[in-house]
Amino acid sequence: MTPQFDLQLLKSVGTDVFISANVEIRRPHLVSIGSHVAIDSGFYCTVAAALGDYIHIAPYVTVIGGARGLLSMGNFTTIAAGSRIVCGTDEHLGAGFVGPTIPDQYRDNVIIAPVTFENFASVGTNVVVMPGVTLGEGSVVGACSFVRQSTEPWTIYAGIPAKPLKIRARQKMLAAAREMGYT
Image 1 (cartoon, rainbow, N blue to C red):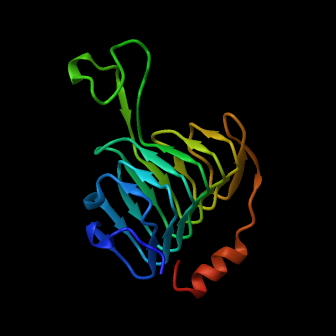
Image 2 (image 1 turned 120 degrees about the horizontal axis):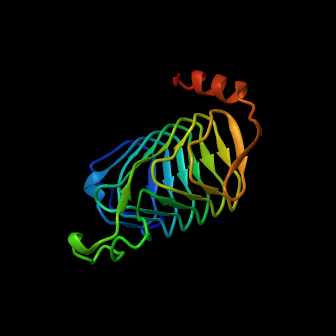
């Protein structure tokens, strides 16, 4: 039996959930997880999170943004290894110092906005997603891409910054989801 994270620490959790013991969820009382979810070793999360069903978060994914940040993942979504989801960041434009240890009156502007994965959306290995991005239903972002703007549904993106490449097939996934009781 592989050691697991203490699921009782979470705000809510469904069935068939595996979270590696080698994760750090800084605010587990702000994290809700659906059913059929796997979170691998090295996951680091400082934000509130609402995760749906049939989700996989691969090894060494980082989700940052502090207590006011939010990651929302719909059903059938994935984050591949080494990706960074940024729900809050300093602007770095010289309006003040940067970092969470600086008193508010001396800090640079802080951008905090949720990152949302709509159903069937996924990001590849080593993708960086910035605050306020919504990954449209079924959209996919290729490895090593930088996402600073929301994506269109069922579109494949890649690059720095991520740009649309082509439309993604969807019929089989939608049919399978319907058979599994999801609309």
